[in-house]
Length: 113
Image (cartoon, rainbow, N blue to C red; front, side, top):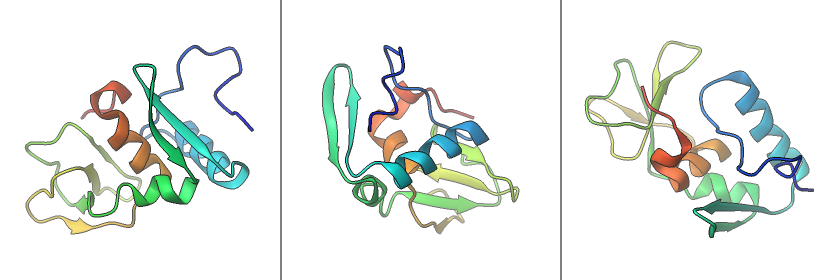
């Protein structure tokens, strides 16, 4: 099943809003394989679980916004979820499919504070 081919030329951005979380939940539940492309090139091909695993060791939770990261957002519980380098005082978080997606796309995903 290809959730990104309903008349779109680019995949929808994924970030902190609930529609994006619902889309990633649908991908995880309905797709056996996913392909992530950036600039017309495949940067990941595998299972949804494999996409989440691609973010292992790069997902952090902290009480304060990170000083040096562009890939972070405030979660529903008020903490900050950061992708990439570990911010000061942050603890490891379990990676999710959207974390792997955002890390693979980086700034192209349009997520920043």
